[in-house]
Amino acid sequence: MVTNLVFSTLLTVTSYAVGLKVFRRYHKPWLNPLYTATIFLVLVLVFVPSVNYESYLQITDVFSFLLGIATISLAVPLYKQILVLKKHAKKICLGVMLGSAGGILSGLVLAKWLLFQDKILLSLISKSVTIPVALSVTDMLGGIPSLTVLFALSSALFSLMLGPKILQMAGIKSKVAKGMALGASAQALGVNRALQWGEEEGSMGSVAMCTSAVFLSILVPFLGLVVH
Image (tube, rainbow, N blue to C red; front, side, top):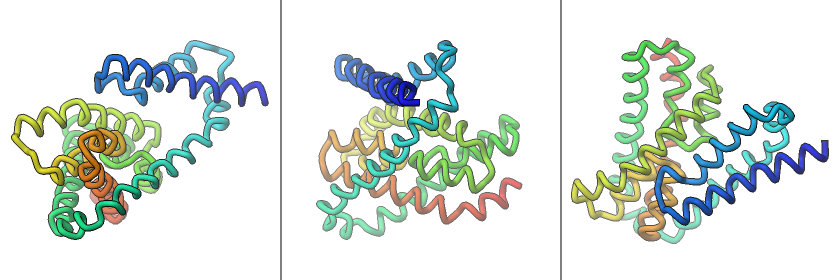
């Protein structure tokens, strides 16, 4: 047990460290360590017989707990930009509601168009919110959590890759708009990218991410009725 604990922890940390080094060298959005580390871990779990997925998942569950703590820490830039938040409160609420609704509807339309089964559809609904909340929502709706993680990561990756370029092409220079756009579409990765632009953009990204999660949680009972 101790051997498995040490190995699983080292495997996880090393995978992320290597992924981070590669990302810092090439600075490509699709080389984000969240994705490169995940791919490497999947390959190890699939092709190394001595590594059991169930045991690995149980041992590394602490990282899921730490993910929640890391998400909460995003409240720090929010506090620092409280005056900006109050100034743009109405615009922020309206923007997040429309963005969240668009994310949910796009998932529903895509799933219906591709004739997905209900379980897959329910797993796709929460693709546009932060993973801890997405997993809870999927569990309440009766979806498949592992698929939700895949959908959420894929959605965040595409938003991270295309979002800044689209904002630039559209001529959007507002710090509030840029931060909210990335926070609502790419979640924590988007907030991290927005923080590279500035603290105000990062704060708006945090607001969008948190508010969209709350908005989706409120809609859960109604979404279940719509799907079924």
